[in-house]
Length: 321
Image 1: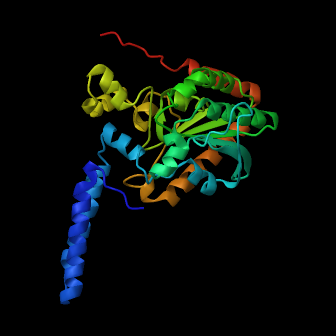
Image 2: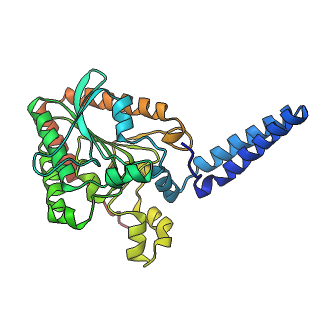
Image 3: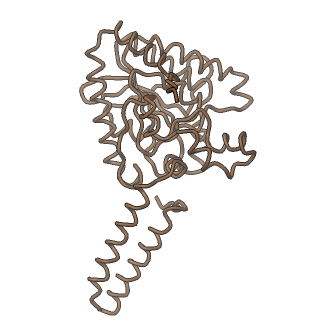
């Protein structure tokens, strides 16, 4: 699909357009521009590296939101096999923003849950822009309890700006649904692996994010609030979102340093959408590795380790000056 380049990507696009013009001119006039073409290609490659290897936090947020990135269902269909979706929370209805079901990851049969966005307006309306309702979280909990019953590990793919904050969601107790999921996932007697594949927004992400292993793609983010929301509170204007993104320490590498994330999954240069097949293969490899490691841990030790993992969150030591 053709999408508009991000603002910081425009120098690359301009060089690529010049290269196409040069090749077209060479074909039309039958002139040898091979040397110029090679120089231009080298310049494009160097520009790509200069830009993508020095991304700011805000630029990574923009890539995390890229409409062409692989979404949860893309991974369910290609990083896993034999995906079978389940529907409904047995209380209210089915939430299209939270697909869930059973699948195979390598040799591991598992339960899979994720947030799903859309690529156009029609699909985004159906998927509610990846913001789940209470019934989405209750459907996820229903699946997790089935996984616990049948001793299947759980894999959760996180990609949401946050849970849906509308009146209907509040009437159906969205906060309670998320809180119950967090509580129940802490004591779920089966291995849990969570992967942030794009946006990891606030409680909407935490509702399926309590896990024994938390992984993040290199150009994803995980934060208690969006940069725009933070900027609106602290600076009274959304145009300070870039400064807020830096202050929030929301990137994968920042969170790995803070020991909130267990592994950062590298992405193709420019983001997962530049080479979706590679991104899907990398996710499969990482998930299978962690499931294999966790499946060897006795369940009581697994729960004790999970408890200690989250007890350590927020701890810091202030050095004496």
